[in-house]
Length: 163
Image (cartoon, rainbow, N blue to C red; front, side):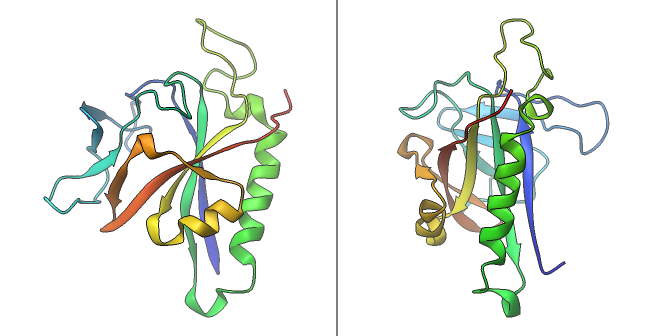
């Protein structure tokens, strides 16, 4: 492939569990940061950091959301609109597949609401403006963190999820 991205349904809690390797992830909450025990990304101090996932001005800390990220395009194919098209097509698909992206399927279970179109991007800080043009808005409450040795910020976008 010349370009890829990842679209991930995300749990409504700070801890995701899975029996099989690679299924979900185990996280430890540390004030305004998370230590991801399965990712190789390291912060400046050598710890593996993820953003704070408590309530912010843009997210109530409970609403289910999906995460889009790991956008990568081969250098010789950049500037041709491929990344934009991948994002647009992925989000269009997500809008019409809300049940598949909800943590519990198509029905509310244990008072966990269905996914209602909220999307989080872990955007590289230096391309934050590009994600802004794609309709994402930075959430200062998530802070700045390091993934794969690159500074990232959290950005949200609301889709019209069809139930």
